[in-house]
Image (cartoon, rainbow, N blue to C red; front, side, top):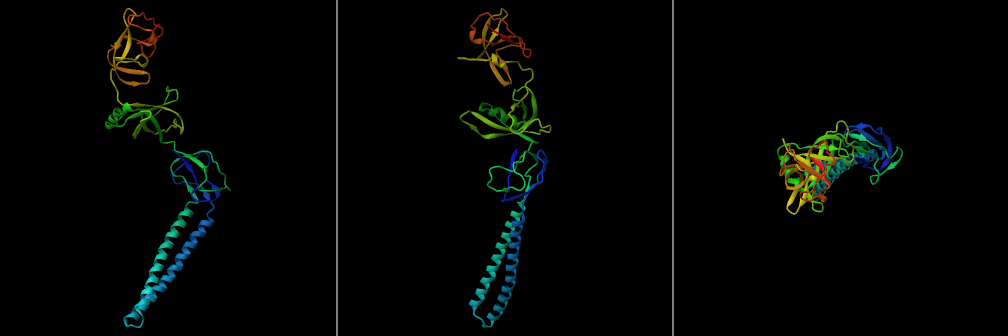
Length: 318
């Protein structure tokens, strides 16, 4: 989470009480604006209330006397009603004075700029002595909440039911990888799935939360997120590059014992990284072609070009 620390009242920045790069807690005072004008406004509002309160005491005493005189018809009823209206008006004025005091107190409190959450202070953009305004486009400083850290990412909409099913059975683990998608940076949990699918891209947005105690994740950093929906035991996997799509559906080129190519229809499960789970069509130990499939036809000779250390079923074709 990134928060721009901005003033809520106009005034001269009097003090800066933080050090750039410092960790702060929610409620810590980060800076102070000259409070003198706001304190004077508060004192004025309090004085106005005291004045109206004194007038109300006098008006209520007069009202009591007028009511007594009215019982003996010594004073017109209209005079009593007029005095009652004066008392009610003064009570309303005192209520307005209290609201003015609350407003002035709030304005005075705003002269102490506090951290809205835990986080780390960035580089200061304004120095003490400058006049700051609520409308300033540039914040005084940026507060970054690093622990915990959230990651936003997208998935194809076709995985929505799988994700929702996994969430229904408990926490879903999300692993954040670096930009090259090779090194795991941190592990967290899926927080939510956005309530709408983007029709333009047919994708859904997801949000994961990471404790990030070691600060491996940084605000604004690009990472790759990998979702662990379920664990498959003894699953048969092949390189995703081996999976081809034809008029009849998905298939792979299988290398026979005679080193010839043979197309084989398959059914697949989930994909993770560059590996795809095969549920039918290929048996354990069979070799599949992972490169150069456009050159192949049935019974064509296949020449092994390289073998991936991660998958002994990988073959190249020429």
